[in-house]
Length: 112
Image 1 (cartoon, rainbow, N blue to C red):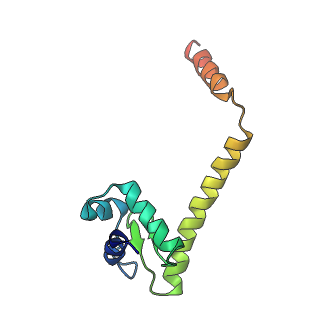
Image 2: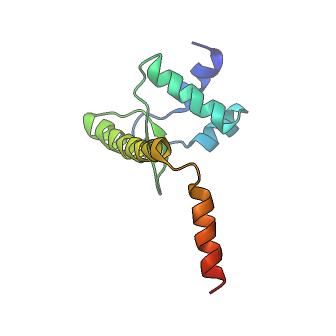
């Protein structure tokens, strides 16, 4: 494990009461948010650290203390996975000229 991975892991709280968001992690470590997200992914996948996240008002990452917190974090990830799956399916099936049709419809309505 790299020094940066260890430093980030030490910043992630245990328990959902005070999660830490990616922006704050990046600021504390002097890295960009993308790098922080990549490190979190590595901690989860490579080292099997159960880091989950809340979205919304009390957003941020935390290590769950029980199965209830774990399931809450999993639900958030499942919702994100579903949305990304829908986006992927749309891209797979999309008409590559759809943007032209949408713009033409907009321009038509604009001239009414």
